[in-house]
Length: 89
Image (cartoon, rainbow, N blue to C red):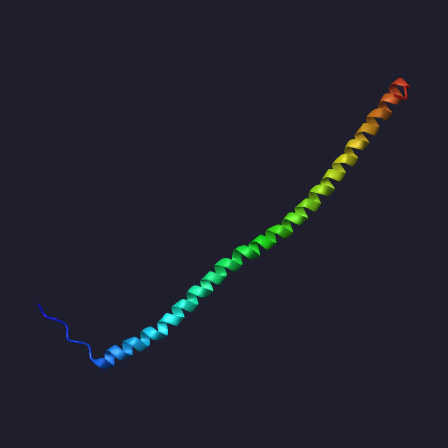
């Protein structure tokens, strides 16, 4: 079997310089990915909270409208009963 030729010191030095350049770049990319993975859910949570507040206000308005409609139906039913029977109860 043929063994590979030993690497020259210049080649080994060039490889170490190249690996020194890649290590911080990879760490920086990993850090940026981590920050993005933290920021996106936090931003989404804030949006959901603001939408929840809007939904709560809309639900309260719907409940008020529903109560007003029920009161009007009750008044109409009472008026119709008075017209038919002449009784105030």
